[in-house]
Length: 197
Image 1 (tube, rainbow, N blue to C red):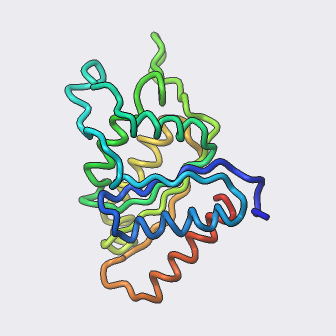
Image 2 (cartoon, rainbow, N blue to C red):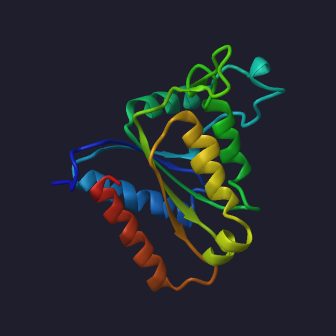
């Protein structure tokens, strides 16, 4: 039995390569959640077919490809999102950023109302867990760089659309980490999945 009531969980492996530690974390979380009785959908960015370019803005956005329409449906159905991805140059990989640009659209993720400076957050009622990998030491990313990737995803993207709380588990530095350390990280991700957190 799960530690919480069964949840509908979307797990997105946001690494552009299918063979990555981010993918392993996503699979570990999904495995734990499935074994605990949660309803899990696992999506791999590397296997999706879509144009990551928004164009010149929302007014010129191309029609959504089938993979993006399916992802929007999964996002709507899930009450908990899990995103596993690396930090590259203080942000997320370009293909993941392109995915966010294409699917988190006005009318789906947020809506501005005349006279209101803060938009309506259309994805409220959902929480999120970020499983983030870095080669930069965690203390350096947080205290020297100001954790730009964490703040962007938690506040400017997911929080902007209404997801809360957004919890972050950092894995750093992955570069030169030992097999024992990586196994411990995977076990922790699986435990989070079992708990649906």
